[in-house]
View 1 (spheres, rainbow, N blue to C red):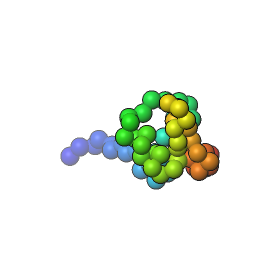
View 2 (view 1 turned 180 degrees about the vertical axis):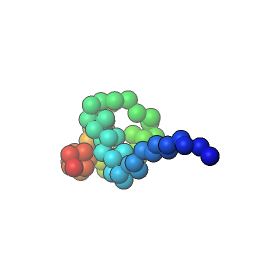
View 3 (view 1 turned 90 degrees about the horizontal axis):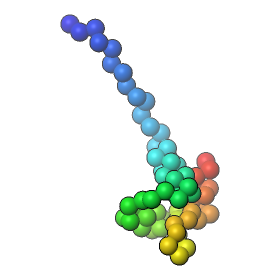
Length: 64
């Protein structure tokens, strides 16, 4: 019988990944084109010229 202790990471909260993604958009990180279109489709971001920027809805979600 093994006495190894299992280590587990807590399950991420549902909004953490989206929150982190929106913060990365604010910083100007580079994303896959499909992900950019998905954020625009959800109206969380918009293109201004070649730059992806958060909409008011995206900014509110990034702050919460």
